[in-house]
Length: 595
Ligand SMILES: Nc1ncnc2c1ncn2[C@@H]1O[C@H](COP(=O)(O)OP(=O)(O)OP(=O)(O)O)[C@@H](O)[C@H]1O
Ligand SMILES: [Mg+2]
Image (cartoon, rainbow, N blue to C red; front, side, top):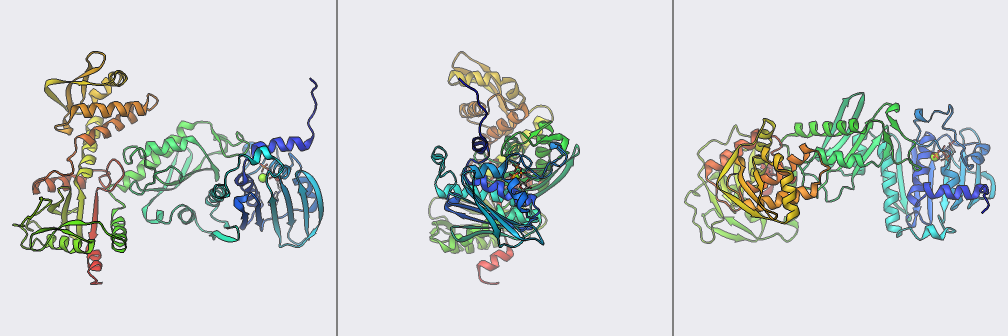
């Protein structure tokens, strides 16, 4: 075996393995260089998802011909003037990106400083092909063609142009969110696919993530322990099935950090179902000494000196904003959207209470809304005639509608929805979702104040379960007792239940235990006790709730409405769906063409 020093071409190729994984990573490096060069506008051209072409043109400071040759050499950078990596504020500092890309593709570098002429250098897989004068406006243009053409091992791992394009777009979006003051445009296979003008951060985030964030987003701005958190997150009711729109920036650098996922989970823990995810763009500013940016070849990860404090900042900041948003819900707009959508498409049949008091199956929503409007007048509905399965009831209007935000209950529809009249419109409440929320908040309050009241079972219940489930429940017995659920092991495959949480009322005890065991299995032991308690409380709340399908008295309905008004987070259920929607008078008038 003989040891040898590797030729520089091979070294670059090896480095490229770390830095240039796919077209999107080359694109990211080029855009970062453009930003570091002080560009005000950056235009990007891609072909076949970047596999055929990645081209980045900027109007930044440009380079002299000598600088251009140097830029293509390994470990040559203009960004570390005083050797202090800690103090770096530019995206780049390793002096590796350009030579790495040039070693695995054909690269054309054209550049022109202000007040000088342009120059052009063409390199093919690390070897100089030609150089000479070039005509271009001040700035720099880098063209990368045939990435990995001569590196079949790499080419094999690339995905379809479509998914490579998606990755490219995501890379541009991240950087465009980090620098809202810079304009960006993207052209893919000759088609303009993105264009954003310089703007402020909230507008940029909304433009790139979701326009709806401007209405359904919460602005975040808080300072703690010398760190600052800004950004925008979606209201819990405005959520997604994937956690793919959560972005974190540390000192303006886009980073991927598992810390964000956990912190988002914790902040929304009882506001969203496990499989729903908020949208977020969060910007953390910390002193340079608190973070190490030199831990990843592509600089997409950072290491915090004290991750727990950063996590605390994010969870605390989000939680405070969510608490303040209180029972605000994304419901009203959703309702308006639903009306539009259902009128355009084939609407589902709706069972409807008619002005004459009869219940009939309706064919469209237009028919349904007038009937609801009738109900709020209560005219002649007290003795509603029911001509098939009782699905709705109504009460004559006696109490004034004014003074309560969620109004006065006027009736119940499909034994599931409470219809109430508020001063400014018609409120529809999902009784199960709302009640579930109230039970959870009650349990949480009781748990915070010490213990949740217990309801002793006259005869202890024996529930049979798998042995691992029994083990889990036994292990959590003490926590569960604090929530009012008293259990003991009863042989290898059973648990004895002595009391259930009082706020739940009468419950299906075996089902409750099964669900808690499943919850404990999923949470594992790594989750903090407080988080675990909260999850378990939410699972329990689901059991104690007024089910859809239960007929409520007017007094019960009004009691529910009043409790919702004073309960935090009552605008959404434990799974993030809205608990109520309001149809304002103006909306009703619009539906009838009166406006
Ligand atoms: N678009 C550009 N405009 C002006 N100068 C540029 C541009 N792109 C690269 N340069 C110059 O070329 C040098 C080398 O770029 P390269 O991306 O290889 O390394 P870097 O940005 O310094 O560090 P890193 O490897 O971390 O990106 C830069 O330091 C910069 O001086
Ligand atoms: Mg760079």
